[in-house]
Amino acid sequence: MLNYGRNIQSLFGELVSASTADNIQVAAQHEAFLKWVNLRLDQQVLHLLRFLADEEEPRALLEQWASERWYERLMPAQADAVERQLFLEQFQIVAAIAYSDLQPEAVNPDLCFPPSGQRALRCMKFMAGS
Image (cartoon, rainbow, N blue to C red; front, side):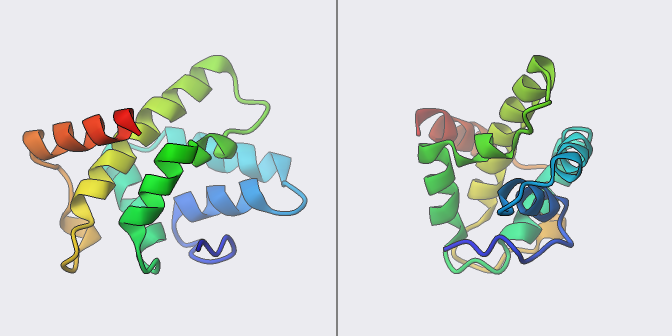
């Protein structure tokens, strides 16, 4: 379902690639992780949407990530507790916004932020309940 080696032009893709390689690249993973948590939320949404652009069913993939908490695997071992908490909170928000923006019709990732308040609330409830 997910091709870990592709779409590295997305910072999220870089983080996934460094975190899921057979021989996890510790320094590269931590560097990509720190870059990711220092992005603004709208930038994270854009990178995530770019990463998901080639997926046949990106909403289903986000649902799977939410139910399995797959994104937690992206946190490097050397990340401290504050960085981990920040990443988790950011990713849940970003994934919820991306989920909302990934309607069956075509989406232009450059125009998807900021989300409407009601849409963002519905998505955050979805992600929290998964």
